[in-house]
Amino acid sequence: MDHTFENYKMETFLFKERTARVIYPNCEGNGRLIWKAEYWNAFPDFEIEMLNRGYFWCNLEHATRWAPDEETAISAEFIKFVANKLEIEPKCIPVGMSCGGLQVLRLAELYPDLVSVLYLDAPVVNILSMVGLGEAEFNPDHWRELVSTYGFSKSTVVNFRKSPIDAMNVLIENDIPIIMLYGNADNIVIYEENGKALEDYYLEHGGTMKVISRSMCAHHPHGLKDPRPIINFIETHIR
Image (cartoon, rainbow, N blue to C red; front, side):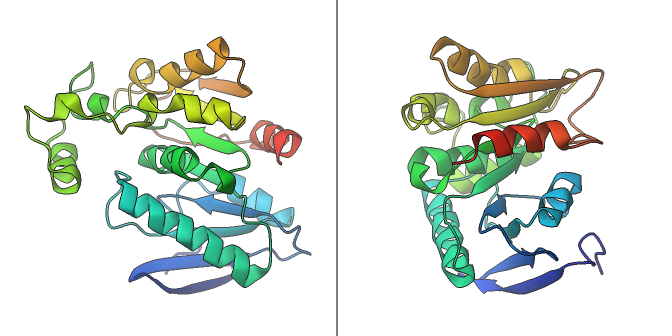
């Protein structure tokens, strides 16, 4: 049994044949929702503090972590379902760690009306980077998963244009604020090929963004020991 959220009421159920979870704050709810896209119980300090501030929390396990359109559509349905169930605002705070970052960025691209402010942590922004076309070492597990998800071959993958890096203009057009963390020693999700592209684009186009670099930190751990800088940004820019 996982004890991460044992002090909170959690409901677990099936949604579209996927395991879904909703966690309730122990205090009076504030009517706002956090959606953690992937790795539901990993590095939870931020979410626990937000639960203590009255936020609701939800997660839906995915058939694939690589965020194709159809999976993103199910995520959007789930967020609307939970908001309706709780009678709260569906414009949520997506939390995206690693491939979860890919998922929340695709939600922001395709369903910007559901996104208030994004929290990204070592996010996958460029799928071409994850198949070894940059500095990252080729990962056969990633390749097999992506072939299964998108039907890639070595000849067709170079033409793929459905990464968040290909739709950053949508985030700017919808004025979506972002706080992003990364480890400057990450050799799995290479920052220069992923988050840095998003940081540069936001800087060039006047977007609202705060970036925190974790010195001498690899891909893990995610989050901050003291999550207050993340929370302060979110509560300043929540819409």
